[in-house]
Amino acid sequence: MPLAKPLTIEQIDFIHEWYEYDPRDMWESGYGDGPSGLIWKKDRGRRAKAGQRAGTTNPQGYWQVRAGSRLIPAQRAVWLLCGGIELPPHLTIDHINRDPQDNRIENLRPATMKEQVMNRMSYEEEYRRIWGLNRDGRNCQE
Image 1 (cartoon, rainbow, N blue to C red):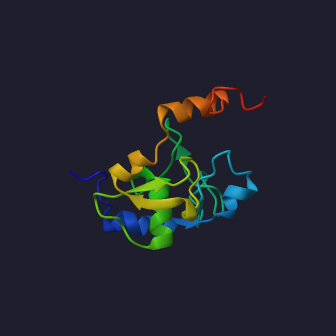
Image 2: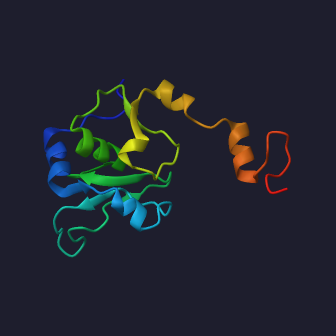
Image 3: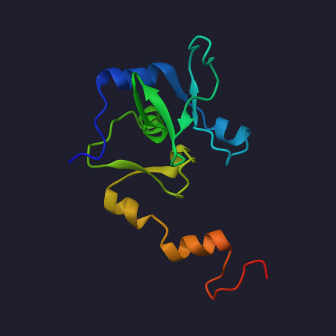
């Protein structure tokens, strides 16, 4: 069973026609506030002007953009714009550093679900990160 429904030729053409990959967007706005890495190539009427950041975030914190009438993950559009190929259905785009808002091309890689699961933080790592604890349970600030 495919992980993501394949994009149609029209949707791929829409991405190439309307979006441009712009890694500067991530750094000029102070990377971390979540820029998508995509900007509009041309005006979209009153809603968006050429050069403006494209996309919105979903509840999980991932950027998403339109490909025609369909919403897709922004990392998929970045991959298409930089790599030029649609991935096979058994692969997805993985964020190497685990940050769902970091869509720099050097932070993205094609991965199977098994590889994605291996890249997740364990519950213990996540707990330590949130509470700022060392391996021995002491606070990192001490």
